[in-house]
Length: 457
Image (cartoon, rainbow, N blue to C red; front, side, top):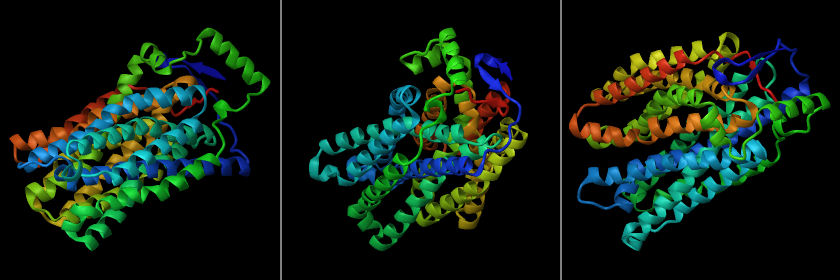
């Protein structure tokens, strides 16, 4: 056994081990499946809000004589949740790194459920005046706090239970949740929109997808309370206890993991943020901003945009697990670099497809783009946790991913709205996302390969 300390993060490099017996692998699969259920529900809630902000929330809560102003206000509430995410990283990262991954995940899911159901029950501006947008922003901030602790804990719980040589595969299973949550939200929103009609959806039916979250949250909480805690928080053997005591004596654990992370691993944190930045912009511009931009600015039917984004998300899901398995075999960086390079090249053609207004062209372009995105985001579920030591891993992985989402995704609709108010062409979306993907490519080149880093407990 040899210890690697490249780039300042301790990691133990161990020789390959035989696959675990059947029960151990079954247990790891159950944990990964439970993590997937949780991330799907959380991102369903988030996707419902994103779609609603593109379709309804502007005029319902921020009425204005100018459609652009209403859209900007709605997207500001969308961005507000991203601003709150770092608070969630600090809160749930401390719980997850000190008390256990499962406790943090149960709490984050409960908070998201309460906030989402609350949005579905809110009065509109017409009924409650200024109180309506204040309550909306408050609940949106609670959603953001919840999301700050969700992704890192879900992929980490799966990764820490994974059999040797399959960490990227198991960690990528909950990473399917964002796309699956969006598909689930579309599966609810599209029939509701078609049955109620655009006027009915705007008046009252937009609440249905939010209220249906009640069932999903109950199921998710039941699933998460039945799985086992991470091995990092199970009673260690005598040898492991001695090793942990020695490690803690050399570097005592901080009561606030986020502070320790920032002071001891700032370089890895910044590069980790950069590595996930471009993909976040591609994801949120595709599944949030373009759903509003296409119909309002280019006259593309709403169903066309929702269908194109949904088919593209399904294509991304199809690539996720094979990409993760490849990352287990050849390394995380080669797969992620290929995805980043592909997104740099494809960003402009993908958003230029909107100018055609052809549903087949748009759907094909989105599908290719989101499949390339999956090459970036599938291995990142194992890659980011592997950059940090065990007692900072929840906080480190969450902080890197969430801050990348905040900078690259949360503000993307606002930046895109501003860009298109000055340059009325979808090409600017391609140049914007392509530039951020290029930055991700450079950050990945600066980071080490982590495939052979074993998790120290």
